[in-house]
Amino acid sequence: MLRASLIALSESRSLRAIAEKSTLGQRVSGRFVAGTKIEDVLRVSQGLNAAGFSVSVDNLGENVATPEEARRAMRLYQQLLGEISARRLNANISLKLTHMGLDISSELALENVSTLVSQASAMQPANFVRVDMEGSAYTERTLELVRRLHERPENQGRVGAVIQSYLRRSEADVVRLLETKIRIRLCKGAYNEPPEAAFQAKSEVDANYLRLMKLLLKSGTYHGLATHDENIIRQAKAFAVSENIPKSSFEFQMLYGIRRDLQQRLVGDGWGMRVYVPFGTEWYPYLMRRLAERPANLLFVARNMLRN
Image (cartoon, rainbow, N blue to C red):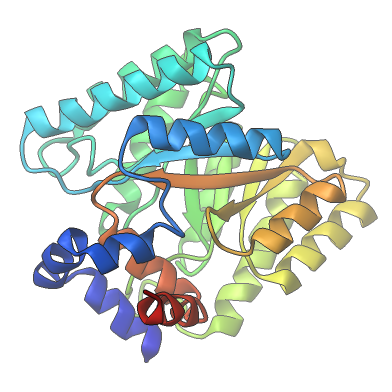
């Protein structure tokens, strides 16, 4: 019930407008969002690299309404890739297709993302573009776009997808993506989906995550396991050890500002650890979905609201 309520709040335009302009909202978001400007996220990324973490940078935004908005978002990512290269950061980029214009047309989104993947592929060393997953209404179009980009020889290994374990279709999607060695970030999912599309019980979502995790780790392709769930992390590590899967052949991924203690422990034990670092002014939907994923974060928000 709490999760569904938080997801519903994430979709409220009126609350979003109030929160994103308020001093309190901006202060609370600072735990989970690396500022509003490129320089902010580059500074945070450099610090995370120094602590042993790799980074995935996300410029927050979605559902743009005009081609110019989509192209403006694409140009900001171009600037990000240039700065990542110039500063020799261990970082890649993550983006949403609705931020690249998917609601306007699939071809516009393809054009924008293709420009970024080409830039990432040409970098020295070559970089990587992760296409984030949104609600289930976008799943098929998102995976199709990733497949179209990845089938170009120069892009292979340079663009990847996200699979959500709460969707019933995800095992079939994983099998298909693995056929062409597309890199996958596996997460649980953070949208409000109907029972016919998604598992509703946490136990079912977790069980599916573990099934898909085993497929990914045995595939021979480099994937990311995005989770803060210590039970799942323990089982993933145990599976890797039992199957003689090297620590260097996959990575764990976590969100900026969440379970920093666990992130540090994984790095200290020699596991790959990538921190997903968002930035930008459009932080409200992102923050509300993070609270829905882990309602315990509400305690952090409450503490911040009581501080001067």
